[in-house]
Length: 344
Image 1: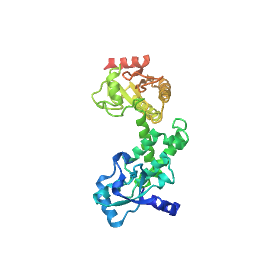
Image 2: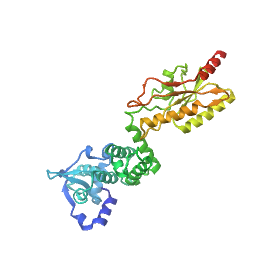
Image 3: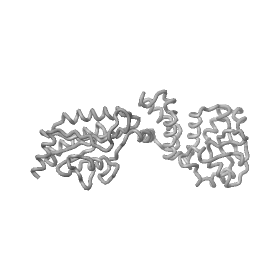
């Protein structure tokens, strides 16, 4: 635990707390990186300084441990302090078993306590990796579901609020805003669905994971630029990336301007669903349906817009062929494209 938690325990439990505080020999504290909550292991670079501090000024807060059947103690936090004590040849460290033997913290509550303990000021607060790891553990274990009383799919807003509030409360010294933590939660959620749905980057055609690279390799309308990204024109066609409804509205506005200026008359919107956090296959299907309805009825100065969907769904009822574009190129669009190319 950290100093703030220690002070809170003294205030809340007084003499009861003292009954669960022990000075134990260093050799009786078992620890390894697997028991450490930090994403990249304990802060080994600070061990020696921490050990010297304990030797000179005393230990400011005990280490949370669990008593083992062997009579030894498993260190659940404070591993940098334990390592520092070894480096400085200290004989004992103060430990606490209150969390396990008196409070009987649940697995979820113990994980919260340990993560909060690692948010030290100012030398080693939780890092970005630590916070991502905290989120990932709670997503995979279902802790967020239990805390929110619902799954993400059942009540996205309530679930997200609980998740952000929980992680924020554990990392107040890290300097992260709630918006930053919300972005981290969304990033982790995206990572949990990679096995079910494919996403694309918004990079240039030379990026093998980009949307435009996939279109270049798989389209039937001979669009094959050597470089460029969204909006790039090749062979009298410009392709525009659309990954949410807001970008669709913006792209249609840009296409309208280009057609009116006579810069390019043939445009294709390349569509996929980028915000996959917490989404199911049906959400992707519904998004694409909404885009199709919007583009299908759009005509600008008598010109139709082409539409292609990138494949994303890897399994289940809506499974797609991940090697093929789903092209919706009306006869009107293909006719105007042929006419444009003949003029060239």
